Length: 198
Image (cartoon, rainbow, N blue to C red; front, side, top):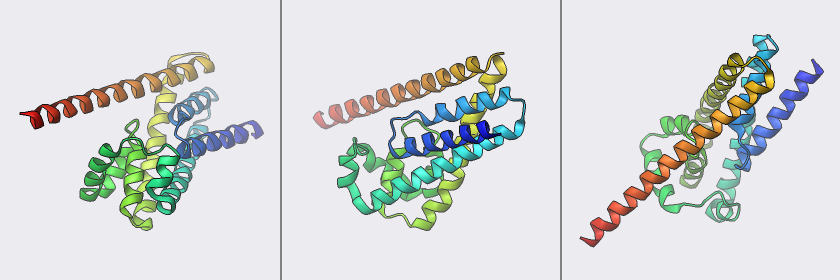
């Protein structure tokens, strides 16, 4: 039981830290913990993994949101959260149209959470709206990544194999989506350049 609590505490710390400093693969951490929990043959442990992952993501998002509300774009640039100002403009437009759906989906798209969070903070989205909308987004995110971990754990007989498989799947999916997004942005930029030159 102590080992389980220690693992959940580490998961919480890693995911919360990764939500604030987005260099840690938080989805892979949740998937790996879920794969390990699956091999313990106690379904309740998987629920605890989902809860710990969601709570940590929520706390990390609140800290990052508060920092952006207080420090603004200047702080976001200094911390290297804000890298693509043109993309931020389009995210702000989407967020003004549909706040709740955009917040919900942003956590599931690799690289989507930070721009949406920044846009929400810079637009001055009310705290109440962000706090309420971000809770189900974090729960959904944690459930999806835990599901990937459980799938990896169920395929392989050894716990470490399930963890490695889950982490690899997360990394491959993230890289693929990131590559597709960059290709789309490059095509859109090309189209805008050729349209302007015509």
